[in-house]
Length: 241
Image (cartoon, rainbow, N blue to C red):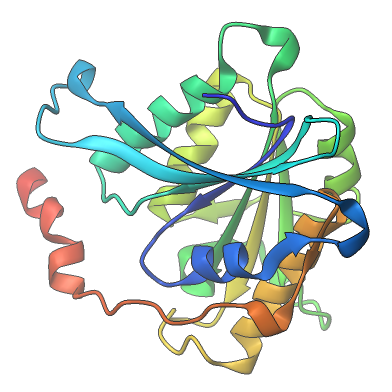
């Protein structure tokens, strides 16, 4: 899987956030970037999953010299436990075999406040933080530049969001240079046109643009998520009692 040194990994959770980020990011007029679209498909047979594969879309922004500057990898929507297998396969491909060319992975999340538990002395602050940064793995110029602009997550940061928790674990094991941008929304991710959620999305988009030679346009944000039945989303849990 050929990617740039900077990879923005978007997990399609079905809420429309990843589409909003992908739709808002675009090349600056002066950058002369070319856009290349690609797709990928990875088998999951090694996990005993024979009837499903990992698939997604990749948008590459390529400079005039042919150098891949930024890659946006948009993973399709998967539910646990398939999600863990899918993430593991994608991260293994990004890590590759040549450690000298391992990309910096940047993963934005929009998480309901109910899915995170912060230490009391942080939650009682008068100034509310909307976006936290979590830096993992070896430090690169990109990860250092991005994390320095973000409020670090507090020491006691309990996570009840499965996708975020899985990714944190896998990245720690693989030691990939990674920065996670965790934006906090209201108690429920339901009203996608809310001003508060749009502002947090735009904050995250601006951070991504700042280290990728791209621009983030609020006017181009796509917010039209499909409706997902909670019953179908949580059906896998019945298998585990």
